[in-house]
Length: 319
Ligand SMILES: Cc1cc2nc3c(=O)[nH]c(=O)nc-3n(C[C@H](O)[C@H](O)[C@H](O)COP(=O)(O)OP(=O)(O)OC[C@H]3O[C@@H](n4cnc5c(N)ncnc54)[C@H](O)[C@@H]3O)c2cc1C
Image (cartoon, rainbow, N blue to C red; front, top):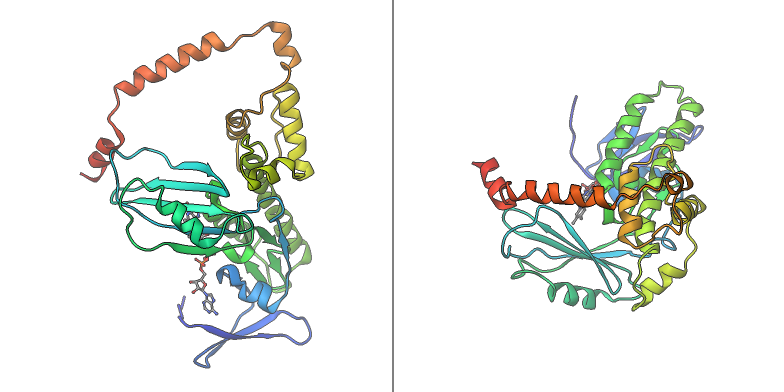
């Protein structure tokens, strides 16, 4: 294997097939290949720039299109989890690391301007800011074809889902695994390409629906973003899940859903989408889980008391 570094300046397509034939670096060197993997990030140099595969924009369901990040000094004991907090025009992340805390505000530019977002984030840090705010822009959605002709898009070149559930790296791995499982020969069988695209569409849409659920069920109505989300229509695949849960607490399972029923349950209940009725069989048997759940909570609390704190645990790990 040979690794070559350089910036691609030009892409040549085969005049007959429209397949990518070669890429030319800015220094003039040209490289031909049979299969190309586009990892060029948001630009999608080959999949979009050269092959015009098209982009399905999901901003109407996931309106956040900006993020500003700003690390700060740690303050107090680190928590063993990432915290996501709903804000006026999006949500704020807080990720405690060993030597600093990562923070960011993901927001919708329609309802908040960049300077104000950076100011709000800076005013909500746990400790002293470390460095200036860094801004990112994105359009939530997916490339209409992740695999087009002899180009397979992996990573941001295949689309972007806002980072509420940190799914980007999972989707990178998912496309790599699919490419290995469906590796083409020189004929590039259209059925192979179609199967790759079918699976990647389903995988992405399931995650999309799960993220939309957080917004759709949000109870606050004190800002434009949240009023918009409460009123918006959601994809049918998600509406069906919301309806079934609301009626009888049923979790409708779907193939290739990255998020297991326990995760869906956590968001429904966490966002106060309580079932209107008991599932009929449960109602018939008169099951009351409160006693059992109380015992479980007590056992967990007792167990937690015997464990080291998070900082202590990390210290033990790193010696
Ligand atoms: C603050 C932050 C937190 C994140 N947290 C998480 C997380 O917790 N979990 C998670 O799953 N994901 C997370 N992500 C997202 C994840 O990091 C990205 O999705 C991933 O790194 C994208 O990788 P990529 O290779 O597709 O794109 P990129 O990292 O953007 O790489 C694209 C590369 O293509 C190169 N390139 C572009 N044009 C050319 C050209 N003409 N010639 C040659 N090279 C070119 C660029 O130089 C670049 O190196 C986070 C992102 C950020 C910013």
